[in-house]
Length: 417
Image 1: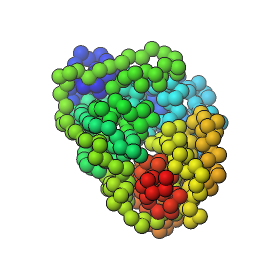
Image 2: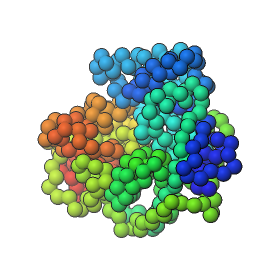
Image 3: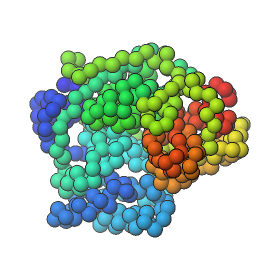
Image 4: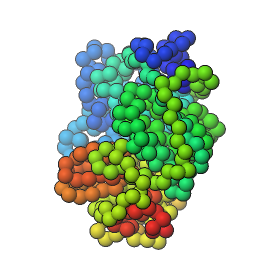
């Protein structure tokens, strides 16, 4: 069996599983946020149960429209807060909160071998820890909160192998953008993406989180990495419960095997209006930008901020560009502060926000007007994703986003270093 099949078999009391089977699966964590939780709460109350199946295995994170951007957002956050306090579930209030897919791993709420379902499409992020994690609708999440299990079809697995060593300024964001550009936004439709190879073995955890996060942009049901020493080092100080490490069998059956030589890959930019519309940064010229966003559940971690700060140190954001930096969590914000990264950003003329999803979904903290162009470390660039339907979003890694903020147009980091 593949890695995903091993985890799902263990959570459904099956000795063996194969793609296409329908199973009931026990879950280790059920997640929702300030947009999706209110719907789940309403549906949960219709079921007729008074308590969630296990308060320790349910978490709600207000991160999309928080700090509350308007009255409607405040009402949604209030509903989530009251439900969470009444149910005594895991809940992250302002001051302790962050972007859900950043704070769950750093809080030790998700561990290797877990099954995690969330009312957010980027729940697939936790595959970086060797967990099966996937997004579901709010009504499914309501049922999971009540029963502790979900009904699903076992996905086929595509094996992706990345051979060779990464070039300068190339990281997890570039590998996943390159992959999506190659296979398309439906290239892994309802499939698990299992990541392997020398480049993956050498990649840090933040890069792995980025790749797992964007499996959904390829249509994937999940993205997953094998657990290795880097994974275990990451969780050793935060794991507060037992966990199980699973390995894919040597003779596992994959629906497809796709291989890449990463030494030939340069920093990638996904042009409007699809994550699959990718080009090497060197192929873009004179694309003037109005805004640069560095953050999100894709690239708001400490290594991302370090990379951006290394580019921006001693330099100034172009006067015609708004540069917005959003740490993924309060912990990351504090570490960035201690390391002097926040000072670097502010001295360069960027604005630094409290942790929030904010502009990624066109929520707040950086909405685009008609005709404006933004380069962003976020995960989607669909029409109207970050504001006006006549705006444009370009996706890139933090180094490219930082360099472009300085230049005023999309450039390689090499051009400003």
